[in-house]
Image: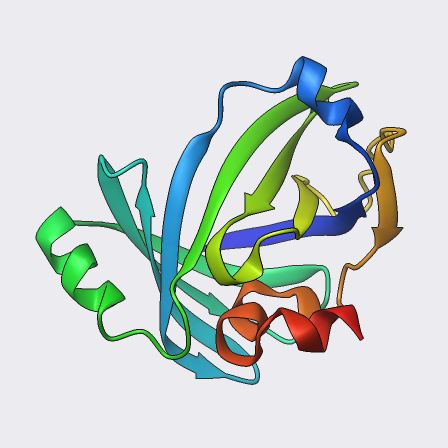
Length: 157
């Protein structure tokens, strides 16, 4: 069983762009959502897909199970979304021994830019880049699950 340990921040400015890779387009949809668990399908660059199950209430750590998924199944599951299909471009940005993922949302969530860093241990202390804004770890309004089912207006209030 894999553990997801991550911190999440709003992005304050475009300083991350000079060190970012070219990014990949993601489409993701939730097919099951509950307070402490979700089942998500994600298509990566229209090339491969993965089904992810996340379980846990902690703001920092959750159990995560991931499985490769045939593209035809993934596309069909997108049509079964609870809420909207999230569209975003994800960039990887190295910074002082950690890789940050910056998500630039498109479509219904356009204008939202979020950065997260995955850690190996809860005690890891990644250096925070200058381009980060407010920390939103544990603020469920900014979880992709809430954004898909409740929208961006809830998150910005």
